[in-house]
Image (tube, chains in turn purple, cyan, green, red):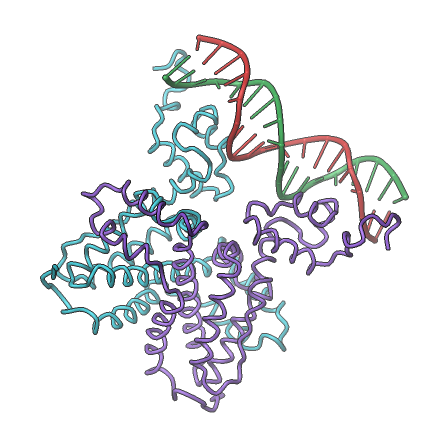
Length: 235
Length: 235
DNA sequence: ACCTGAACACCGTTCAAGT
DNA sequence: ACCTGAACACCGTTCAAGT
């Protein structure tokens, strides 16, 4: 209850969680550029300077937003079929990315600005969980790290591909595409122009992801003691 | 020869090429944030507004920088061994990315903001070349498009992985890592902490890229008429 | 027609002044 | 000790005024 009862729902007590959720909402609705200290302060009905209590810079705010999204990714670690689990998590990641397309640039590029060990804990948890899963499946820790890198690279590569196909206004896709392809010199881009129909038909992201996973998992099968449940071997 | 002979080498006549090259130099040396209209104008000894002749906005300038780097990637299209060519181009891309790490975020994320057909022509050329290569190898155009997507996704995923391992100051790597790992709760991150030694040992990017390529290319072998030279089949 | 630069509407962040 | 907000040093971009 505030002194004047004019704003019943505004001005909740702040916390890092609340600040980051507001930041995520802003990014989802209006894009990365809309996330400024001043704008976010306005959104939370606070002096922009108050936000520096919860994030020491705008960059940390961006990290926090990426972390908030990735924290929703949970990988159970004691499952009978670890390959199926990797597949499931991949699709979870995809759904998360599609739900927050404006956050994807942060997810894929923010880590470049932060050495692994200094990264927000929420972004390190999937790594730890996957290492655990793979070690229980019989991999050595070092091998597990390699597999993790291939897997994560695959997810990042896939989602960057898929989001390129999404056009903001679906009604305009066709026109834009024709316009764009028409602009290309026929002499220099015969193949691309020939693919107009296929490009207009769109892209089955889930299927493409599964195909990539098939490849990765088939590459892994010759690599591990057994395709399913296995005792973890410990030194 | 200027009116006062004080600046012999400054103030070259501008062109899009020259503007973009200066922009790239700025990004390489000082990072993406240093690339502002005002700063670039200063670098070229021009009124910042003059730059709007060569790029209609800062966003287009960013696209131009990514384009300038990617334009250096050339994929010969009439080679006997197309798989070897894909491998070669992958390593060329890797070297290009390592030479311009600050541009990598642009390369992987700018396409998200621009529908395929409206992209700068320089970023479309590798696509066209690869389609040509694959069609000559015997793939249908649509299948070639799928392969292109997997391949490009692989390259993006890989380079994002590899650049994460690079730390600005190599001397500090060790300390930073120990510090960072120590910060992680042992209870929650046993696997990650156990990998400290492997993480400190670093990352052989070229080898990791080759392994990923092995997987992709092996997945492709069952897929195409012949492993090497082949007549293009036309309808 | 082309170019210039003043002006507008913003930024992130510091820090002195308040409580 | 904590919080506030004025102030600093920047931004991208528009547009009127010059040539």
